[in-house]
Image (cartoon, rainbow, N blue to C red; front, side, top):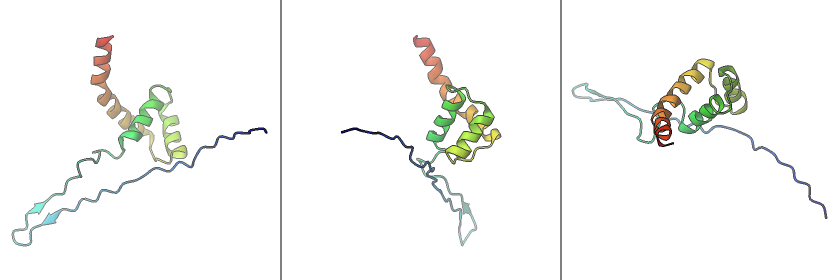
Length: 107
């Protein structure tokens, strides 16, 4: 008996969650109550998993902004312009600044 293994990547499709926030106006006084995002919803357009992938590509893998944009858009099907790559990278850097500083102080 002979085994023949073939690795295959599954199709990659992002999971998109549509958070709909409806502002409501009081029929009597007209006061408008603005809706807020539910608690677990990220404030930006990209979930932590997308931000982490972008951080990995820009940081550890040292991809250019243009390369990262192309991979995220064409391979992972998460549309990211070069401008949004730079903006999200800055957000990731801010989020990692404190843990990075703490790790450096520890070592």
